[in-house]
Length: 136
Image (tube, rainbow, N blue to C red; front, side):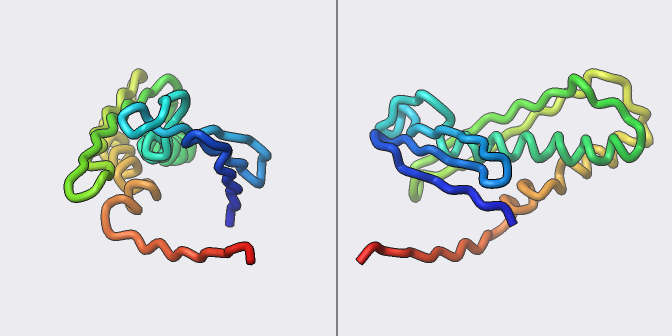
C-alpha cells in the first residue's frame, strides 16, 4: 500500500505528498476548466501515469532479458469530452524505441505495454470506494 496525502491549497490547486518518499507534486486545474494551467492537472496525471507505466513495464521485461531501452520515448495525448460529463475520452499513445531490439522480443515488449497496471485499470470499469470523514 502507498499513501498519498492531498491538500487543497486554493484557486483550484492541490499539493500531493507521496508518503514513502516525501516527494511533493502540485496540480492545477487546466485553463479550459477554470484553472490557470500552471501545472499538471489531475487528468494530465492520468495520461502521465499511463505513459510512464507502459514504458516502466516494458523496462522491467527489458531488464530481465538484457534489452537496452534507454532513450525510448512515449507520447500520450489526452483528449477530453464533455459528453455526457467531462472526462478523458481518448489517450492515444506513441512509443518510439530508438535502439535495435531483436524481432523475437518486440511482440513481448508490446504486450508488456498493453498489459501495464494503468492500462489494465483503464480498460474496463474500475470500482472506486470512497469514504468521507467530516469534522464535527
